[in-house]
Every structure is written in structure tokens, then in C-alpha cells.
Length: 337
Image 1 (cartoon, rainbow, N blue to C red):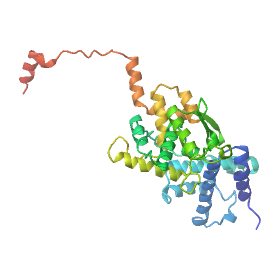
Image 2: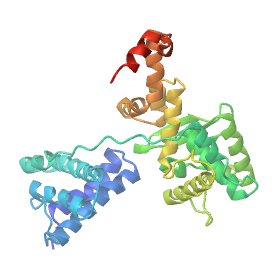
Image 3: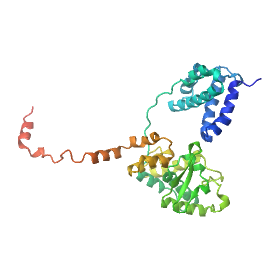
């Protein structure tokens, strides 16, 4: 059977356009790929259209709208996930416009499908005291405990995304003054993040203890699991959850549900509360757009309160007379029926 135009465009889009021209990361490409796996599944299971018969003409805006509804109702996906899948489809159809101009009108009807509005999520973060308590939980007398302490310290100190953390190689850690760690973020963009002295000391000991200080080990992953493989996202989440449970056994400082990304949120909030400029926080976190970083400023009520207090000092006189000593007022109150 002759390949369809959809098969041709999708293959070129995923294998050449996204990695070469858009320079997207593997994780982003995998996310886009998963969107089309679900779309093909929907066509086969719901519309009885096998993969080999899916064409660009078949993928009408009505079919795509039905697919998005199916994601929400049948697969119980959130609005955010639904919008992510739609973003992948929008991107693909924009690519197809240039490859097949004759289908412009058809493609643009799909591109016109709007994203759904979602509730603004609360930026969940931990207090400095909660972070300190978590870092006190690993057993420093054991090899694994020291690894976990170093991992959590790096995760917080650098504000790294979990994928950035597990992708760190030994050669990305530069401990000469000033100590920095090189993180590779979204779109394969790299940034150099400064390390504080305590985290630097932990890393120095960790690298020496695990004999990672040889030049030929620079390409080794910094953090590994029991099988000596690079840690996974699930592995890091398990480590965090273990110490959250330990911390909560004798304190309520740490909330019950702590995910890995909360370390990144916490670092950003603590930088903001310390008076660090949003521009610096943006670069520290590897955000492309300052608007992404501004979510921390909107969420930080404590900084807002301090700013308001500093802007309007002592405008309201708090030295009011003690009404309990006003005998006239007390007599009037006592006569009320």
C-alpha cells in the first residue's frame, strides 16, 4: 500500500523538522510523538480508521475536536494535558502548511481550534525551615544516605528541573572557584548555575568517595541507581518521598504531598524573598520568557506585604485610647437593652 500524505509529513516532522530545524529536546519530541500515538489510537478505536488509512484530509477539525473531547471524557486527561496535545497538533499542521500549500484552508481550520482556559495553579513551595528539615533526614553515615543528601542539595541549590538533574554528567560539575554546575534545559539550552559552598563541599566529597574524579569518567552520570544506571524521574521522586515521610514522622513543617518540582519552586521563591531581581531569577531557572518567572512574584504574598508596609509606613496611628477606660462609653453600653 502506498504511504499516505499523513505518514510522510508526520515522519519528516518528528524525525527531521523538530530535532534539526526547531532544535527541540528529546523529551519535547517524545511528548509530541505521544500526542500522535493517542490520535492514531483514537482514529482506530473510535472512528474505525486504521493507521494506514489516515490522511491529512481525514484529520478534519471535527475529528480533532472529537479527539480532544475523547481525551477529557474517556481518558480523564486534565485541561492542561488536553492543551498540550492540541499544541502538538497545532505545531504539526503549521508545518504541513508549508509542505502542502494546497491544503491551507483545511489546515488552518484545525489550527483555529482554541485551547481551553485553565485555572491558575498555585505555586506550591516549601519554607526554608522545611527544606532544612528534609536535608537533615538522610543517614550521613551510609553511602546511599550521603548520595541522597548530595542529590537533594544540588536539586534545591541549582533550582534544576528533574530531567536536568538526572542528565548531569560528572564533567558538568566544575568545583574550581567559583564553583558552578552546567545544566542542559529545554531545547538543549545550557546554563551555568553557581553552587553555594555547602553544596560544593558535598559534591567534592561525593565525587571523591565514588571515584568519579578521573578525566575519563567525565561522561558518566553524576547520580546513579543500584544498577549503576542513570537515575530516572521515578527514582528521584522515590528518594524525595522517602525523606518526606521521615520528616513528617515528627514534624508538620513538611506538607504531605511534596513533588520534585517543589524544590525548584522553593528555590525561586526564596531568591525572590531575599530581594533577588526577577531578571536574575529568570536566567537562574533557565526561563525563556520573564512572564514565566513572574508567577513567583504573583504568588509571593509575604514579599507583597513587606513592600506595602515599606511604601506606607506609619500612616495609621495605632496609639488609640483604651476604650475600656472610657466610663461614659461603658455606661452607655450597659444601658443598651
